[in-house]
Amino acid sequence: MTLDDDFGLTEETEGAPGDEFEEIDVRDTEADRIARAQDREFAEFRKRLKDTEQFKLDDGAFDDATYAAIYKLVQDGHMGAMGGPISTGKEANVYEALDAEGGDVAVKVYRINASNFQQMRDYLEGDPRFEGLRGDKKAVVLSWTRKEFSNLQRAKAAGVRVPNPIAVQRNVLVMELIGNEGDAASKLSDVDVENPETAYDVVREYMRRLHSAGLVHGDLSEYNIVVYEGELVVIDVGQAVTVHHQNSDDFLRRDCQNVANFFEREGADADPGELYDYITSHADPRTEGDKGAEGENEQLRDDDG
View 1 (spheres, one colour):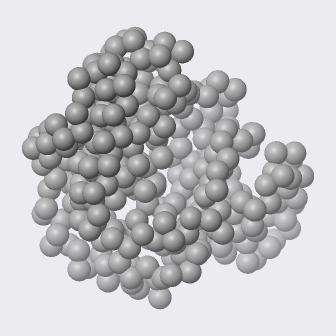
View 2 (view 1 turned 90 degrees about the vertical axis):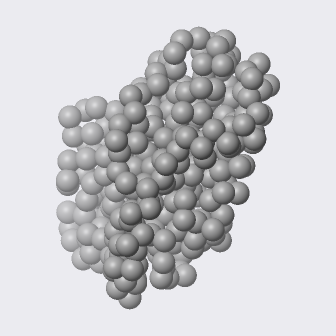
């Protein structure tokens, strides 16, 4: 695949304050209550879904509460039908699906028994949005799912091209499908970049906008940027941390190293140190939200209790 246009740089928007400690609710969800109730309608829905061929091979990602989360998303009109898997991983699977109007969406299902549970904790524990988080796997994975939804919202508000977040329920996230059914977007690593300087400028600008919004991606590389119809789209923002995280600067330097090294190999004039200096000198994360930290952290502790 060849990439040779302006890469769809979106217009920068004012966005949300970068450093506000927004509330992220990690209490039991309606899906948990549905799973406990086990009513006949839900039981029939679960049986139909479990009998679908693409789920028979993947029982590890689908406990009763996960089926209940999908059931609730269908009830709320965010999903109409589940399709096959787009990608499978140790922490999550991503599926094609249809919304209530028949449009394409992507459904990301995180496994409660995620193999990189401790790595998730490392990213969450330094994030002020999750102070007081319990240590059990369910709390961590559900928090991670809410965190990805929140990060997508914040990135989109800042003018970064990411999949549009649609809904979240427990460990299930519904978002825009980048591509069409059977025509998934290609990773940047898999395309022929004919204008690497322009592509690099777009990615650099998205990194600056993220930082101005108070976020660091934390795992940005050619493998977490996809290309579809000439647009560069940043994906997999679940691990993104706020600039308050004790490791945020290390994560930003690593992102700069990965991005600059890739584009240098493609022929662009890219340097990790210069990229880091550009982002930190041109971004302006707000700090007014610090005053609200105490109240929100108390709310999270109450939710976890």
